Each structure stands twice: as C-alpha cells, then as structure tokens.
Image (cartoon, rainbow, N blue to C red; front, side):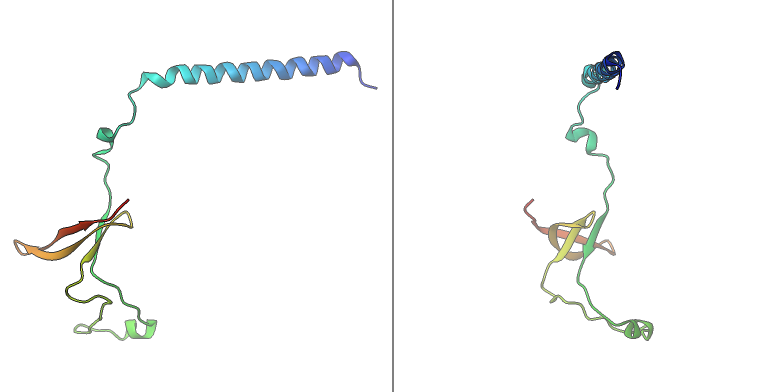
Length: 114
C-alpha cells in the first residue's frame, strides 16, 4: 500500500508545475502588447506571385513529345474571353491581354468576389 505522504508530495509537485506554467503564460501575455500589431500597412511589401492564364489544354505524353517548333496547342478559350489573373494560385481578377511598348500586359476588366 502506498504511503499517503508520497501521494501528497506528488500532488504538491504537480500543483507547483501547473503554477510555474501559468506564471510563464502570464509573462507572455504581458509582453504581447509591446510590439505594434500586424496591420495591413506592414504587409504591403510582402511579395506575391501573379500569374496570367490565357487558357488550358490537355494532351497526351505522346502528343507532347512529338511537338516541334511550329506545333500548335489549341486552348480552351475563345479569343474574346478574358484571361484569369491569379495571385498565389487563386483567381482574383479577369482581364484582357494587351501590348504595352512591345511587351504583354493585362488590362483588368473585373475583380472576383472574395
């Protein structure tokens, strides 16, 4: 049979451990307000990947390896349909492909709802 004093010491030890952890959490909470909150202004310089997708196509591996310069890939969109504008892989807008000083650009025609 276990000594009741051993059980009492175990309970006291466990209680002390919980008190120490609670005190450490209080210290963390007290220090939390010392740094400015992460607002939208602090996120404005975060780089994101912007991709413009004008269409897609499915091909077999055999069709791909037989392609050569001059081969044609037919996309799944009509000429008048807008291109998708993706940010980090998610569609955020649609637009039309334009040329600006000899390089391609995209004129945004609509913004997707969040």
